[in-house]
Image (cartoon, rainbow, N blue to C red; front, side):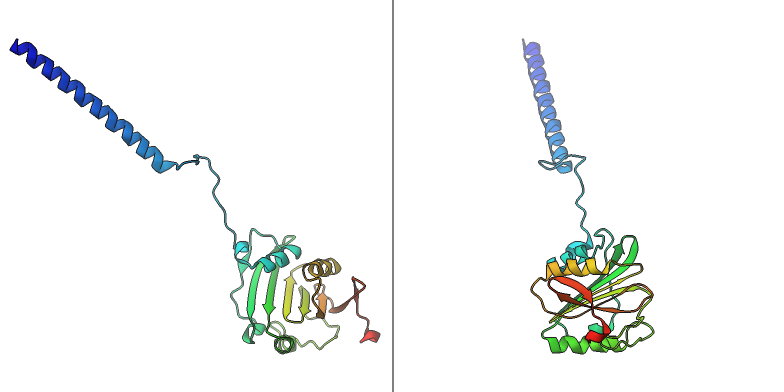
Length: 213
């Protein structure tokens, strides 16, 4: 009788231990799965990609888009430009590509038009590495690259491209972003050619002729 009782007790203990072991293994599997994939996720879930484009202000994102800069390869411009040395409220400078050509965009905002003119005219007195001087309304080869200056009362938008630009189209696109802004100076230059100054009349852009100055 005693041997039978001992056998039953041993059998029950073995069954109990086996059930506990099974429960522990199941719990471990659940925890491991939870660590790998959180609720609602799958192994093939897309990775979130953040571009430097997202660091631009909303307004500058619109400017960058309308000037045709690709979003994927934007980089900050860290070098100091001459306008940076003059008082300004906000400034962002970035580079990238437009239709496969290297491009640079810069936007400065100023407290008033007088501060803007001080910075802008000093820049035009010594533009680029060769310190080329540009007088107001002058037609001159200022750079080997294509240029655009879109100057409003308190804001300067600058574009430089190693390739051709569609001048009138770019001006029309910028005008859509700033439909109520007063334009102080607007000039363009195709790569290797002379500067051209523009005016807006009856919602149309045209080149300012010498006799109009």
